[in-house]
Amino acid sequence: MKKVRFLWRTVWILCVSIIVVIIMFFKQNNPDMEKKTEEYENVVKIMAPYTTHDQRNALNTVARKYEGSHAGTKIQIEYIPKENYKREIALRQDEQNMADIVICSSVQMQSLIKMGIFKTYQVTGKMKRSTLTELWSSVMYNGNYYGKPLTSDPYILFYNKDAMDTKGLSVPSSWSSFMETAEKIAAKGSYGFGFAARDSEESARFFMLMLYAKQGNLYTIEQNAGISAFADLQYMKQKEILPPDIINLNQEDLANAFSRGEVRMMISQLSMEAVIRENKPSFEVGVAQLPGEKSDWTFDAGDDIGLTVNASAEANTFLNYLFEEKTYMGLCKGMQVIPAFGEDYQNDEEFYYEGKNSLMKDLKTENKDHAIVVNEAWFSIAEELAEGVNECLEGNTESPEIIAKNIQDAVRVSILER
Image (cartoon, rainbow, N blue to C red):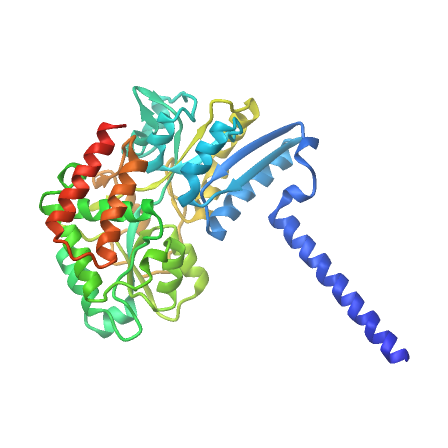
């Protein structure tokens, strides 16, 4: 009987311990559990599109440090998936329940400005001189600035160096050599190439990247660059170079598949380095600048940040704190992205890179051709471009010329109706 009682007491203690651990875990990851927001003097609400652990942890760390030095203030961050971002913002705008600060991708910024989300922002010449000029184009509208560039997170080529070496292949520099390598590097159980295509924005961004790589743009989709881009997508689908579930993969899913060796090359944003590093792949990872028919170029992407029209004074104070040098550099390093402002942090690269400088330095250099998407009709344009990409990925047998013509017409309508 004593043994039974002892066993039950042990089980009870174990259960209580597990419950305590669970509660502590949720408190750590959801600090709002500890104290209701109405008990704070100031609450600053932030909307952010981050999905990876490193991105969220970096921003959460900044918030907790600010709270520690500003008694009575709560920084409340809500993370919303990118595919739901526009809908959530529109819904909150209708309900007059908008956050104080909104972080969004640079390609979304113009559309959100046009929706009346942001208040104007005072920009000085010193601010503009401290970062890449191109990054300011997304936050400027009708001669006014509505926020600041927050990060630079350009697209790069990740590749399985072991597989590349085994097959005697070299890192492709042109788009045509990239297509050849993608086919040759594939093996049983491993696809040659992958890109994120789960939502319209990710598909559209990759298509824009292909256009720029082929020296095209939004207004030349029905010309050679656009036609060959759709032809390449159809070819990769037909030759099974792409994973069959590609339309279900976001960038993090793709990075996980790459880390497992299921995809041997991928084009994704620089911040996916953190996901790959955390996965500890069994092969050596190589990184390279983007292939293209022009040399020394990059497809810039990243995030912008702005105060909404109803933002509190405390929100402005937090935004200034966020851009203090030590805080800001810590944020960028934690997110594994390039700082939009100031000098680069020391990046201990673990991946193989053939360049003379660090990858970060080469990506940020001013004499490079920095391609960036800026258009106030981006949300509707993205849907049309993604439709064309999906047609190719789903095995549409129409000619690339017809697909390119149809998508060009739809994009023109989106631009005219903006």
